[in-house]
Image (cartoon, rainbow, N blue to C red; front, side, top):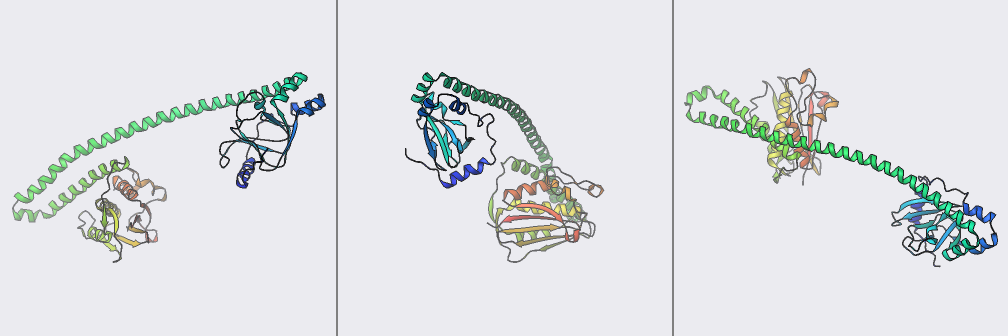
Length: 414
């Protein structure tokens, strides 16, 4: 017989797994066959068995091969496994007194598992022909053998029963999860439909407002336009802000469902930030100042221009809402190598630690008296989804000296 050995790594894996393995109960050193060897006619038994010695790592029998011999382990240990030896499924570990391969003397079928010696191993082998002769000469062998098989079948039935109960519990859990999944999908569908209806109903009056403002600029006399210039600018700015809110609501729904399109191009963040800071802050409180600190050599990024511009605008809107009457808002950008980092800081009331992740959720609002004038709605949710859609990250931390808030996001340069 040719000696077959597993590799050192395969043997090492089997030995390492043994430490965490709980052996099947009921297979002990008190093997019925060992008792039989002691009590029966030793001459017939000893002549029937053939001794075999194996070294550590030797394959006793291989899964899928034909075999007609069972073995009793006299000393040493074996691992019983199925599948590829590099990543096997371990069925059991067995030692002295255990019987392996007994089905080989009952049926002419290939081996159902591979047996590997874990250390120096001594075996007693009994083939099918010798077993049949032994049963005829010593009927007690047959009885003992049937008792052994009955015990193994009983343990297998108990394991199957336990498995059935576990499977039923798992099936109930899966059914409950499927029901919950369907309920969540229905809620998501209703939310999507509601969002689309709201957007549709808002866009019609918004279009009417936009047309009316343009018509006023055409039909009103020049002196009337000059006299009401500030009012018309506030109305136009309010319209644009509401339009951005509606667009954000639509884009948030699309990005959450994975349907949003990102139109990528080369974008100059430095120019975009400077343009936003230079816009008339009509809705800002009197005395609020805006500042941009952007290095002249800030690299271009590959991004969706409209989405990143809306992120910068939303963050500015939030900062303006936080800032006091003499507030100071600062945009900063810097090159971190593979990414560009942008931050916008304000000297407002700041955001508590336990709310810094919550504020990026849809329709989330800050708590406490200092947040009553404003809430966190779709703007920050849009920012998170848009930045993550670009492969970046966004978060918030306290401002300089622990005063106010500092929103930060990163974008990959390429």
